[in-house]
Amino acid sequence: MKCPFCHADNDKVIDSRASEDGAATRRRRQCNGCKRRYTTYERVERTTVRVVKKDGTRVPFDRIRLKQGLEKACWKRPISDGDIESVLTEVETYIEANCESEVESRYLGELVMEQLRDLDQVAYVRFASVYREFKDARDFVDELRPMLSDGNRVAR
Image 1 (spheres, rainbow, N blue to C red):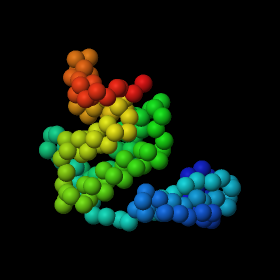
Image 2: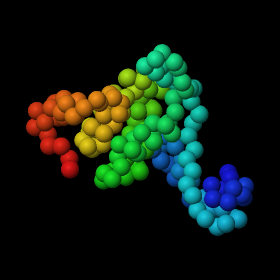
Image 3: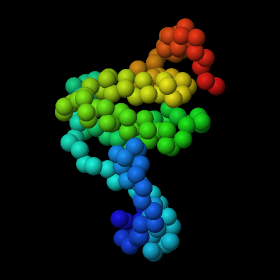
Image 4: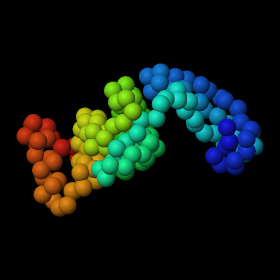
C-alpha cells in the first residue's frame, strides 16, 4: 500500500478490525518512511452495478462520487464520518442485493434521500435540492411540506 503522504510503498498494519457491520475491514497503517498514519478499508469486490443516468447513459456505480455528494449535503451538520459511511454501506448493499446489473439514478437518489431523512433533515433537503434540481424557493417549500405535516420539526 502506497503512503498517501510520501508515496513510499513501505508500511505496516498497526490495527485491523471489522467495520461497516462486517462488510469491510478497517486497517490503521503507519508508513515506515515518513511515520505518518492513515486508514484503509478492505471490501469484497463485487460485480459492478451500472447507474442509468437521466439522459440514458450508463456509468459504473461510483461509491466515491456518492460519498462526495453526501459530504456536501452533510457539511457543517452534526454528522460523523461513520454516519456517512453507514449511509453509503446501506445504499450500496441494497442496490447490490436488489438490482441485478443496473439501477436508475432516480432510484439511487431516492434511496440516499430515504437514509438522509432519518439521519438529518437539513442534509436531506440539501441533497434533495441538488438531486431534484430545485429552481427556486418554492421547490424547497414543497419538499419541506410533507416533513412539517408529519409533525416532525426540521433540525437546526
